[in-house]
Length: 250
Length: 347
Image (cartoon, rainbow over all chains, first blue to last red; front, top):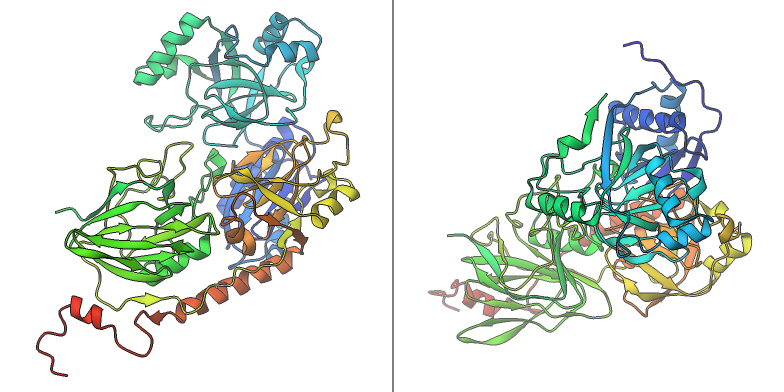
């Protein structure tokens, strides 16, 4: 197949991650092109079946290459990866449009909304409007099963992470940090600012596809009130919710 | 009849773990797996199991297990105090750690306390008859997957055994305690050591760090001197574009204190990682208790790889050097008697 190739990459960095992994970094920003290279190398390594590679983990601008130091070494593996990149990485393409219902109104769901408003010098209602108006794209799943890093947040809402992460963030919390939003699939520690909550579960092992979101999804949030939240939450819990109504294929 | 181990009393945090769930980090699925790979491997080898067999990881205090099988061979590995086996018609007998034991139907194994370490392991010959989730029996409790119903054991649980009887063979013990090393924890700089000032890096390798109470299978939050970031934290110095997290990665959030990420670590994270624990020393990290202290010392990637290969060779040697578990200088008369081999034999 004559797929288009990404142009030669000027700034590939190989960063050490101990003796069982290294990171192949394609840049220091989040762009569809850089992420496309990451996903393409992820696929290319899987196809090449390099000996000693245990798995690879794509993220926004880097690919973590995990290896077994008992069957290969960094010195053997790095040149092979470099050769795959030099051969040219094919340009991929994406897919679905997804709507995620979100309740911003309950202070229990959005404990950081007021602080985000204050620090970005706007009213809470305008923070919500900016979140609803953002054109999001799912870049990477990670951190825990089903957690998606979703880029495209309105630049006006940029904030670094909290300096001290919370020990417990409730499941299905909708949060922002830097120019991204995310949805916590489980109760877990977390350092992002909580601005709302969805009644959906991002990971449900009872479903045939336990993970709802996929890399490449275009995503928008839809505002719901507490009553609607409670209704959908009951259906999700009972396993009767129709997830297909949230997805359009393009 | 199903062969099983019934949990009559639960320990504090006992989960089934193997060497980890590999191949699904891209879906955000953490590897989980044994915190102390060396001890689990020794326990499996004692039982004659393949290295990747799941065993019971015992956190702090072990469970009481009733044997509901004709017989089962178990191995206990780790610093366990005062494990006992009890039967309705016999006095309790102490069970040593770091060896196998043959248990019979109706006996209750009272696994002791883990002393001076956070983890010990119980393996059973033949392993547990449970369905793997995504190719592994490792319990990842945060998502409720793997192991026994995706959680730590509770009273009333019944762990199905793959074998109804123990396989034939003698009891074995570990020859000499495995040397985990005692100097500084070896680390490799990176992937984001350039996010820290020279002073910050020197603080990290020049100070003692104490395990805080926030230490679990996900990671260990250390207490000690604050590590300085290269760029002020309020200017984004503790934020990176999230990337994949290798086992043993040491992230340093804005507060400046290191967090070592272990078996249940997230697959991707956004705090800069000053260094990564060399895999040779991950089992040591997996044994640390709150209040214990460590220092960190940097080695190169090639040195870390060589250390790991050496550890693996030493592990293979330890396994090759297992000894028959019998009283010094003699045969195990009690065992002979229990096995009914003594009937008809004239001395």
